Image (cartoon, rainbow, N blue to C red):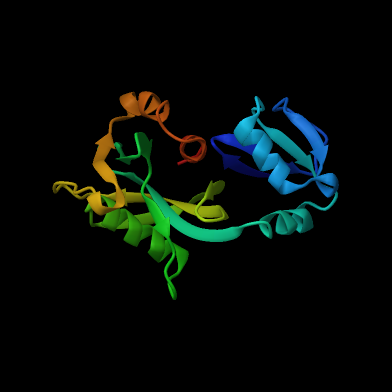
Length: 200
């Protein structure tokens, strides 16, 4: 199954006949992707399931409708078990950014977290999840973000990357995470859910 968000509404590509999300279902082979995007942006539709005969092939065909942008990011935990968030565009987010030529995705993730938050001393513990969302920038783009669980013992002052529109970089205590997620994106909620389900 692949879950792609646009305006925090999911497009779910699946070969399963179970629709636990209770969204409308249509066959991928009869789908015009631009029409799906239009419905999710302009109609009272909370999500759409695209049933695939061949999930991997249909996923590749789906991606061909977009410019694919690869990014890496981090869910960073400090020694107090607080999680590093950034605040941008009136939303709480996790630090992330685009891969640069010649980089591996894990190096991208570390670099972007460092740049967006002014933090150092990052260690990747493991890969968490890959998320996808659609946005418009001269054309429709599909951002594929690879999220990593990171640790840091950094005790200095965090410095949000203001030139990227980031106004806050802050470690959030676990007791306040739910309220922060209420003012965040579906992909961030999904990434946090994967983290919470880890068996340490």
